[in-house]
Length: 333
Ligand SMILES: [Zn+2]
Image 1 (cartoon, protein in one colour):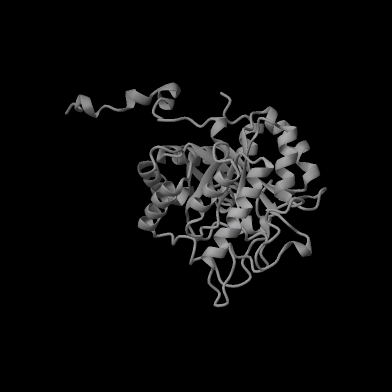
Image 2 (tube, helix red, strand yellow; image 1 turned 60 degrees about the vertical axis):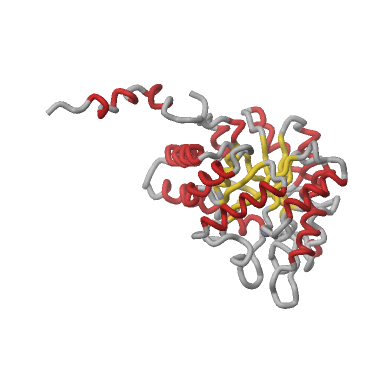
């Protein structure tokens, strides 16, 4: 029996070009944001063994490393400070926005070398607290929300004053988006600095290589009381709406691949702001490990994950693959 005419689909994607037309949006260089780990040892360049091909770098190594990437179309980076000095950590993370600290130094170095590069800064305290948690801890072990938000706000404003284009709080303390937005207004930077919220950030198993790189593993307990439970679809929707109402300019979902439904929810709930997805260290390391084991081709799989992330609704992709995408011309065809 003849197939119904409306059942004939193959003609619509028989050619490589007509297959490309099926995408609602294509990955561009403008969508990619590259994470950088910056230490307080100026000449350091250390491979992070659990994050294949990725390094922690001191301030003197940043410009030589990034020059070829900027030439190949790198548009934006997100900075993570990795203080290694023994004096850099205390219970309240007081060094998080120190003028000589790695993030402020990084902003100033990159802005003068690459004036057009968009510089986002992760804002958190866990790299700077002696206990490794993302805020100030009360005597009973819980986060002190008010004190934590105050420190997060101070940190974000310090980065903004130093010249960051974007501050991105990842601490998950309640109310920090409003506090930062008000802080930006207090210093007259609310019309210049973008506020990207890690709105739907889930606690889970994919952050191990990042903690190796950033030295930010908590010394006791875990982050399950402030990062979202992986099953928490409703909680994620509430967090997205809350951060949007508090003034977020971009809503981020993290991790990406196991949370594509949350990216789609973010796209639906926060339709008037761009959605970012953070393809985290564990996702990157997993793709590398499986490719090495012969399960699939590295580039083909990485590009498939990007297609999924874009299809779900994100238009900003924070990924460790950015370096390879640009240097190997994965988007040139
Ligand atoms: Zn943190």
